Length: 179
Image 1: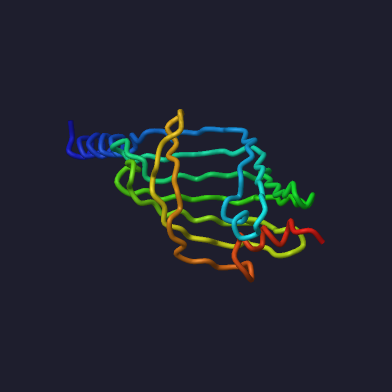
Image 2: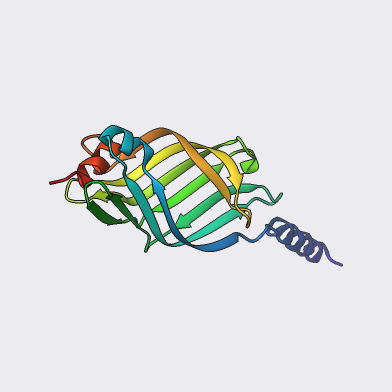
């Protein structure tokens, strides 16, 4: 075998070895969940609930060693409805945001992640709007049954774009307060 042929074989083997990464994990899930908006309820002095509904697509990426390195979540048709039974008021907002999460330590439980949310976060009835690009630090708290990490935000790092003039919780309260 000639020297050039040997180099081509070695180069081809090297390329194929570096291109062997795990394919991304993809999960599609329909969300239809109602939960109490605890902080907004506390600020308002009456119960406020959030109802999320829509399809979410999770894509988890791995490095060559099989460790989770990042995730991209999209939910173009997701909506959130906030309602207060005591006032009879409610509003619904589209939430067509994309969440990009970069993981450290292979997304081990307790490790830190940087989560960047881009798009419309919530329109609070006719009261206010929260959108743009928000960056948070988060901890990995668990995994779902498919292996997608669940994270919990613990610090806002930056926010660019239209932001609410008061806290998100106060905007929710104002959006469902009796007129």
